[in-house]
Amino acid sequence: MTYQTINLEIADRVATLTLNRPQAMNSMDTLMMSELADCFESLTSNNDVQVLVIKGNGRAFSAGGDIKMMLQSNEVTDFNVLMEEVTRLILAYYQLPIITIAQVHGAAAGLGFSLALASDIVIAEETSKLAMNFIGIGLVPDGGGHFFMKERLGVPKAKQVIWEGKLMNGQEAYALGLVDQVVPADNAELVVNQFARKLLSSPISAMIETKQLYHQQKIDELIEVLKLEADAQLRMRKTEDHLEGIQAFVEKRKPEFKGR
Image 1 (cartoon, one colour):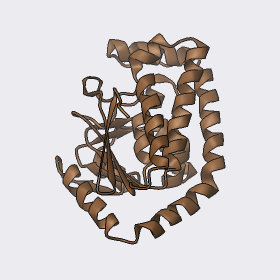
Image 2: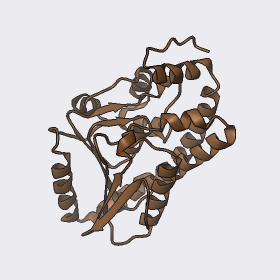
Image 3: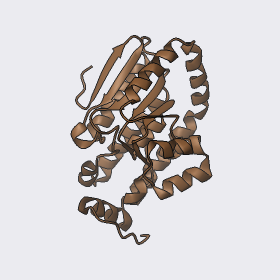
Image 4: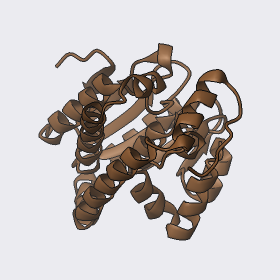
């Protein structure tokens, strides 16, 4: 299958998926979301793949949802389509019978960070810039961000990190437990390749069974969280704070929120 916004290469039981909108720091528009969902769904039945590596082309993993797209899709219908694609790609990714590795360099923010956290293993360069930064534009995390943050941090700490929306480097994210391994700048690809080879020399079928056992217990919860996130996003998009957050982002200034 040929894609416009992502590249997929398969060799020796490893699939490498590259987010490929480098001019936009691999921010996700509707097309990329749809192509990611299609790709994950196709990999579900590919028995030749046991490891999937996700990385970004250019200087970032993914800056998150495309802000320009958000400005253009104000209609409820457009927004619902968008959230349907987010739900489809996250559910397909979470249920993959494959060990998934996020290879993070540069920015991994918003929806991009949710996708990274949905991976079984997150390997980030120490100079990475990671943030669950929806709060900066008056929104709540989507892409299962609430679910994956809770899985890694527990509810109390997850709330604090989401509310703060802090930009973290690789070491800071590792200290919190959001990243599984930190590597020097420009070394992520080498380390990820070595890690993938180690997995493939292990009884990986048994490892995948363990993943499936845990994930199958959690799938109903993830589905519910994705629905609640979509409902919350729709409500938040109508607030004055969100409009101010977007305007401030476009004008490159500090927003003045009023809690409305």
